[in-house]
Image (cartoon, rainbow, N blue to C red; front, side, top):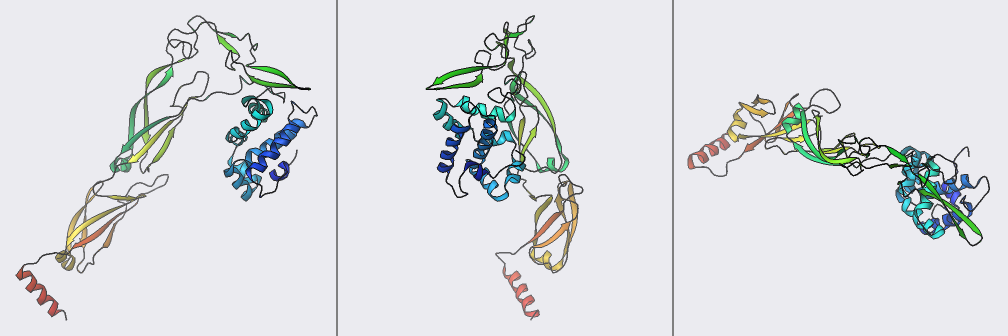
Length: 371
């Protein structure tokens, strides 16, 4: 099909259709076009079309995006894998009713659309096409505002699954190798044929003997029991760049190790510690400097702290409460940009709550003279 049809048109419902109506209509179409039940040459293509439409319209978030932007919005935000992975539960419910099981039905759709399965599209071996990814790990840490100014090198030890040091992750005992699975003949999948009434259904599922790998261990490694991994400690170093903000940062490949797969990622959850003197707003810093009422009136030169030391400022005579003095370039580095922010010093004028007799007299004289 050269251009995608409207998903609502494909399913045969209106744009205001409720979720149950969409599910019911898709079930009817799935029964009609599933290639295990429909031998026409166009059945697989129609089945993929209605399944993709249902995967989007059965997901409230994807449907909202599609309603607003059409195919461009969905295709721009999700890959084909993302669309179908997110809708797996919906498909499982439907195919449990149709085939009496959930996994075979959904996996057939998913593997066919992505070109990974041998279900009904004539695609390649399931077992050898998909590489498992290890689990991600979370590491939480905090740094100071001074670290944000200068950047910091972090050195940490992570407890995780690492490659077995005896078999180098193969799971095989030294001197042995993997052998072809006798159950699936190295295909990684098996075809299951069942008769239901006058119809015959064939589903494809991963081989349970070799777990869809097509290969088995001739003799498992004594150290890792054939798993290929062992518990260990990984020393990880990484640079925290200057100007960084709170957030989660990913270090690719430093998560859990998976034999013949892709390592997971290490997620570093970084928090900036509150500073006793400064408040942060992006690259700018804010500092409150207390001054006396006399200093505000008469003016004064004083020293204020910065993250790098101190700097002199001039309080002009007649300064009003909450006057702001900017120290240009005394803030933090701008992340992913040039230059630094500024430091803003707010002058907080302290008004005395108690005055002695002489002080009162002087203020009264001052007040009378200013009339």
